[in-house]
Image 1 (cartoon, each protein chain N blue to C red):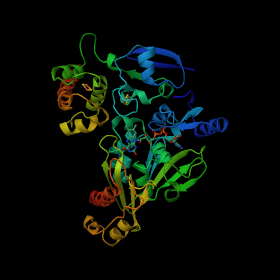
Image 2: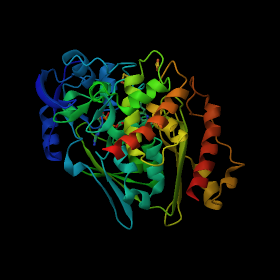
Image 3: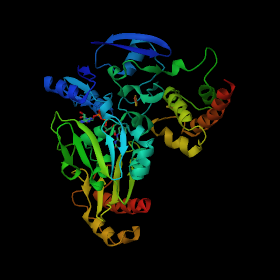
Image 4: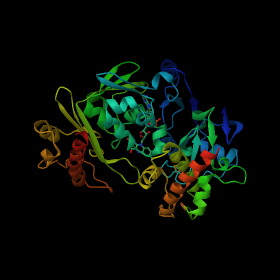
Length: 161
Length: 266
Ligand SMILES: Cc1cc2nc3c(=O)[nH]c(=O)nc-3n(C[C@H](O)[C@H](O)[C@H](O)COP(=O)(O)OP(=O)(O)OC[C@H]3O[C@@H](n4cnc5c(N)ncnc54)[C@H](O)[C@@H]3O)c2cc1C
Ligand code: FES
Ligand code: FES
C-alpha cells in the first residue's frame, strides 16, 4: 500500500491504495468518477483516456504511483458548471456519439488534439490523431465533424477569455 | 495484475541498488508494454522500479557526428525535438508513426529497445544506423544487441541509459502499419553512412525479430535508388506467417517498404 496525492478536477485527493492500482480504478472505484470508461483493458481503445498534466493518456495503462503529484482532469472536470466544454457542445450538436461509450475518451483526446494543433487542424490530421480511440457505433464521420467544429469554438472561447 | 511494490528512484545508481535488493523486480519506463503484460499476468514482478522520472535519463543531444537520445525520453519529446529533426529526420518520422498519440506521450526509446518486440519500430533504426546502446555498466553495439524475439544482450539488472545514433548521409523509414495495433506489419529502415556503407534493417517480418537485408543492401550499394530494387527477390524463408499476412506477402513488403524508404531518404 502507498499513499498517492493528486489533484483531480481541481480538487486535492489523497488515497492509500495497493501499488498495483491503475489510475482508471482509482477514478472509478475510489473517487466515483465513472465517466472514464474501460473499453478494452488492453491499451488499444482509448475509452479510458484522461488528461495527466494536460496530456491525453490511457488511465488503464497507468499505475497511480507513476503519477503521484500530478494534475488529472477527467470528463467530469471540463464543463464550467452548467456550461458544457465547447468540445462537449460540438459532439452534441454534430451527433458525434451514439451509444456514448467511447465518448469520454474521444472528448479528452480531441481537446488535446486541438490544443496541440492550433492552426493546422484539418480532417486528415483529426483522423490520424484519433487513431488511439476506437468507436464501434458512429463510423467516425460525425466525430471528426465535431472535433473540427469544436476547434473553431475553442478558438473563439479562448479569444473571449 | 498480481501485487507488486512500486519504487520511484531519483538516480540511475539508486535504481540499480533497488534492483540488487529485489532480484524479482522489473524496471518500468513508459509502461506501455510492461503494464499490459502485468495485467495479463504474463509478468509478475515483485517490485517495479520506475525509470521515467530520473532526470539524468531524459533528454536529446546532437553533435556533428551523433544524435544521442537518453533512454527515458518519450516518443512525444522525440517528435518535438528540433535537434533530432535536424540531425536524423527519419528517426522523428519513425517516432511519429509509432502507436497512437497516447502511446507516444508515455512510451520511451529505452523501453522499446529493451523489449525488442519483433514488430517494434526502433530496433530497425538501431540496426540500420549502427547505433550504440549505452547502459549503466557498458556500451553495446546495435549489431550485438538484438538476440531474437523479445531477447537482447541486456542482463536482467542492466539499465539502458542512452542510445547514440551516428548521423548518416541519408536515411529513410517506411512501414506498413497494422491497421488496429499500428505495429509494423513490416517496416524497413534504409541508411547510407557518411563513409558510404549501406545498411538496411527490416522489422515485423522475420520470425527472429529485426534483421538486416543483405540483398537490398547490395542493390542499393550499387545504385541508391528505388528502381534499383525492382528486380530484387526476397526469400520468404524464416519470415512470419500469421492471420495478418503470409511469409510471401511479408517478403514482398520488405522490398516495397525499402523502395518507399529510399524515396523518403532522397
Ligand atoms: C496501443 C499500442 C500500440 C503500440 N504500437 C507500437 C508501434 O506501432 N510500434 C512500436 O514499436 N511499439 C508500439 N507499442 C509499444 C510501445 O512502443 C511501448 O511503449 C514500448 O514497447 C515499451 O516502452 P515503454 O517505455 O513503455 O517500456 P515499459 O513497458 O515500461 O518496459 C518494457 C520493458 O523494457 C524494460 N525497460 C524499460 N526501460 C528500460 C531501460 N531504460 N533499461 C532497461 N530495461 C528497460 C522493462 O523492464 C520492460 O521489461 C504500442 C503499444 C501500445 C499499447
Ligand atoms: S480501456 Fe484503456 S485503452 Fe481501452
Ligand atoms: S458511440 Fe458507441 S462506441 Fe462510440
